[in-house]
Length: 265
Image 1 (cartoon, rainbow, N blue to C red):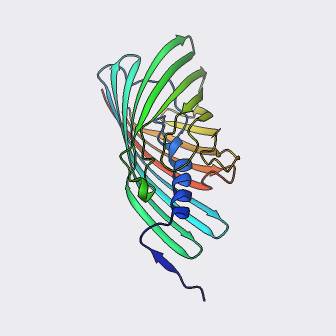
Image 2 (image 1 turned 180 degrees about the vertical axis):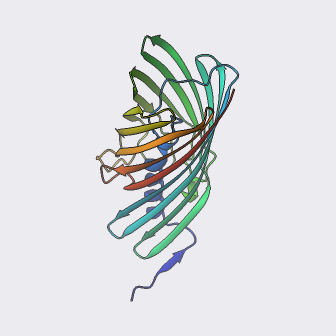
Image 3 (image 1 turned 45 degrees about the vertical axis):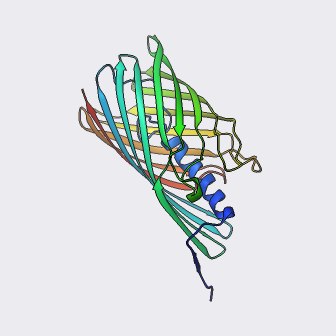
């Protein structure tokens, strides 16, 4: 019979593992794209318009003698500064539960806030490009595995190509990843998605991507594949769902995403 020990204060080993898995699960989820896609597009809200996105993601990761469940509820507010530029605020609430060597560790709370600015600088027929700088504000409790503990920056190049009923999106990004957890600072990100307009109100989506691992010891990059859809109940109101699979052992193995998007012209 195995005796299970319930830890109130997470050990450093479990805490660091939880933070790395949290990073792998959340980083792309908070990219403020067309949910449930994790790769952003060049679309903007346009001047004076607002958009609210609510997403609920649940991830499950199982390794030798360690099992982890991560759930995240994210709220994202987008405001159109002018036709080609948006400002975006994001706030995630995290719940992490880990079992390692029969020790149960739990933590929950708000993670680091984010602030991004997106500017579409090129539109040429069916092809467009945008630049997206951003900051991650150290508001989450790093001692609970909910934040990095330092201000970080990022810069993404976003492109979209529209061909008939398809839209193809590509993201190339750099993440500063300042932290107090001993993780790598300078990270890169590459991802791509396909969006198929299957009917008047239904879109089917595919997504994949990978990036440099923040773990300075682990060399295998987190990589994912995603399949899902989004559906317009009304013109400015949509729902979405997706399944995200970790293609490498360093990515959260199974994640399920539900989303709700409302626009206010």
